[in-house]
Image 1 (cartoon, rainbow, N blue to C red):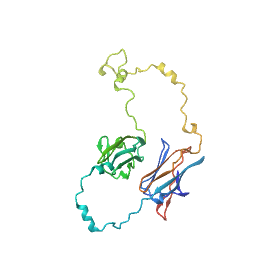
Image 2 (spheres, rainbow, N blue to C red):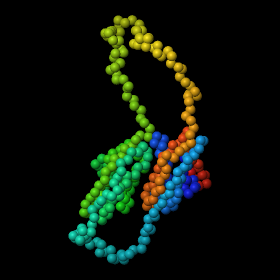
Image 3 (cartoon, one colour):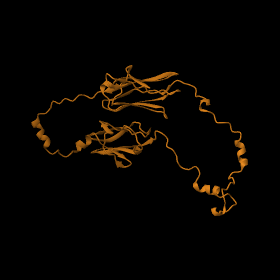
Image 4 (cartoon, rainbow, N blue to C red):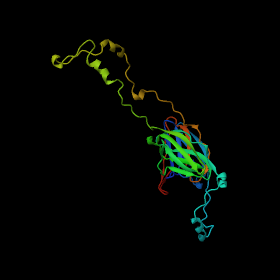
Length: 302
């Protein structure tokens, strides 16, 4: 897999991470904090000896207006701000709007290690205060939690099993509150091994003491008991089992070129928001590999 931006190989850095999930065939490019210079056309090209395929999308970043540090009010005027604010009047309350979730959280199921973005759109006047809960307990503040204006989002860079649970975002302001709920399920990257016995241990008692015979003290039985547990007649069906095939004799899966199953989608968002570009790709046979090249002049990988 090779990523391109504006037809040039995309340089990999601290803000760019890419991952391919072989089970779901999902390829993801994540940009931790979008900048205006991330604007452009993004293409991912997948290649193997049988052929190639690609998908393209456009990423548009809306820059945040620069901040003018020139004071609008002279410093001495700030003395008035030290006075206690008067109580809210009925007119003030009439102009307020309680929080309202217009785009709720969406439940997700992701593979372990994949990025997660839980996002909701909430309006209200004045701007609501947001509280996140996980399994009915406050979610500790961390660099994985980010909020932007009327869009509240929870970003998890790499999902882990302990992230599984029910997530709630509560928006409050002086005139009311609203909330949205979703669930997050994290599937192990590789299926675990079930080490449970196929046969319960107590079932072996019948093998230790053949049916119709009682327990015999070891001291009374000389030598080794050669009586078979299974009648020799039972082995006749095994006499004609063909010799197991060698690995080189096994039929090979026919070669096929890679194929884009779900293409990239265009994306537009504000500066500093996280970006996740996702596509579903069948890597083909033989499986396409990720190519990484190190540029010794610029000290970057691409």
